[in-house]
Image (cartoon, rainbow, N blue to C red; front, side):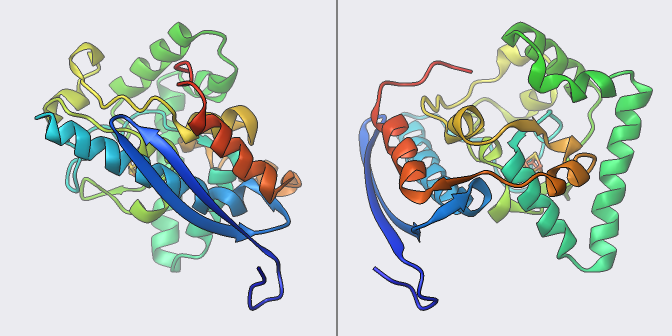
Length: 250
Ligand code: SF4
């Protein structure tokens, strides 16, 4: 199939089991070598389908999802994002009106100052290289205790909701919202998302970094050529991952 621009288009259809439902998703991408950033809309669409289905099933089982506009209690965590998502967010902010762009950039800078004052900045920079889940969990709790809101959080809502990272989309809480702001995570109940495309993305498509470092890394990210993959290969990775056995928790 060809598009108006003359590019060949790859159409695909996914049929995946999500809990007790079978989810069908159709989509299309330009059929050529694609950067992960160009492939992000597919990952976002499929993730949206998965979390909508899981939310519905949780609510049918009597577990109400606490996450909603006006509650940003969980947005004080070190959110992992792929380099491709960081580039997309940088581009998004670059395209905003000057006043808004300056406000968001200032929040990122203030957050880095807070981390530095607390002696955590170097540790957060080393986050992706931490060897164990235990180390990552410890750092995440220390970060959460600082209550540094994500620079995109405005009036307790995500100001970039349609463009938010995959890991934000996959975070669905069923325990009372007030528990989310407490570093004692034992009390937080979440919807199990057994196959997270955020995990697939950072394992097989792009390195990752904490969202809060996106602008600090902007120069490096812009300077590195973005790797490209055949569109078919990217779609197949998603199909294989979602169709195979549940992935181990990362
Ligand atoms: S991007 Fe949006 S949803 Fe994700 S942490 Fe930031 S404000 Fe919250």
